[in-house]
Image (cartoon, rainbow, N blue to C red; front, side, top):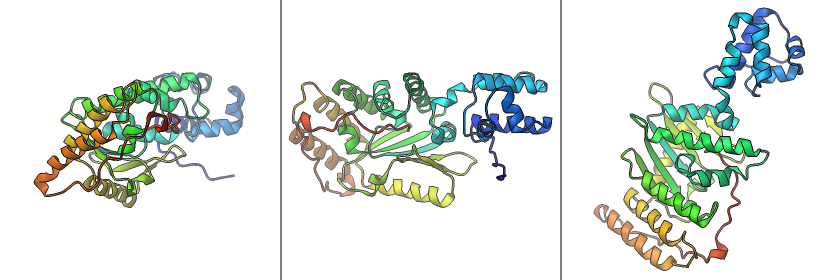
Length: 326
């Protein structure tokens, strides 16, 4: 028999619920198989719920209340109050809490608009191509993703620094009209005093290896969410988090200033994502280069590269971007 999994109740509602089920079941002297016979389900299902690997359903919570009457209906109440947690992919659930508690967030995005900046249409287009999800799950995840954005405008909000690869602005996700609305939203949010949005225009840079977010949480060690094809992972190891943070700062030195970035985003919204599309790359590049040169003149820097010519509409990337949660 394997060693019992160590639970971390503070990690998520699933872990907390599971730890309470295990505690009550052991105190009552009930085996996994005996508990499962009441649901009914097999013992492995009970074990997976206890270890936070599987979400319970209302029947499971009701059985807990029946078998553990001293809890006074706690399991069903907790189940109902935490149902929204399923709107997050398992790998992201604990970091959603970190994101909400952070005083500072560093967000790097090389491929997609970060979840904290997405419009509802953009989020739906991304989440709809994620495999093995139902229409209901897509809708719930869209609502939860948009709800996360309240952290940007809450009382005493965190300082949030977004760093985006220029390709994020050019990759079509959804309709052209939807992309225009998305870029305009990014530009509007970037004007908030606690938000900075910068664009990285270099064709090749170390950030192309993947997206990440670092959460600076008062009184706790910093944590990072590192995105990947398997829905990402949370990094708590200080050395790893420090390396990710340094990577962000390094990339930031190569990015356009916040003012020049906002001007570029607004120009792309008006000139690239219009219908019918037109190849206006030369005009856009000239305007962006002038804005960046002016913004850096005080530091004695010169713009070393121009924005590449915009390809005709038929060559622009399609909306079939991989599903992501952050």
